[in-house]
Length: 145
Image 1 (cartoon, rainbow, N blue to C red):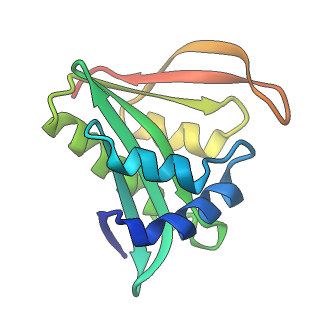
Image 2 (cartoon, one colour):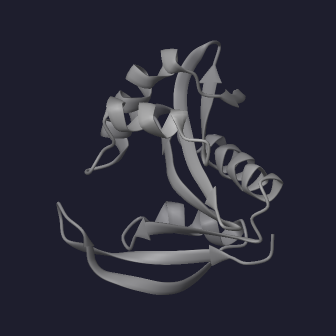
Image 3 (tube, rainbow, N blue to C red):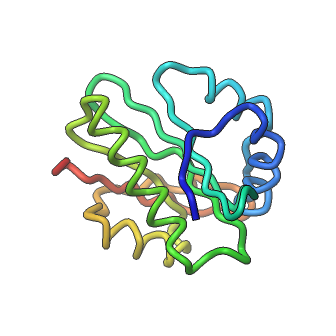
């Protein structure tokens, strides 16, 4: 598995991966805008040249935010999500972030366990933040970068 910077050629497949992972998915256009933003990074996880997942983060005013980590179901449990998370945290630190946050569906226990194992703590909750179905968001922080 290889982690690299995402390029424009990856956007179509990344949007399909996103749609397979999230009920409220990002469009190709939104991914393209994110790719062009000077505050963002999009990383691609690939296996033998095939995109199997991606991650997105931004850093503004000394704080990072993990915006997305999406891995195709057939490639989950193989460390891709962890590698993407580690690379996004490193990017944030390199860009001057002293802390990094993310939000996750309350029911997404595998993701919550991954984030906790990477040093994130559950600090807050956004009531009914998600739709389809309605669900709270758990806000997590790693303030020890």
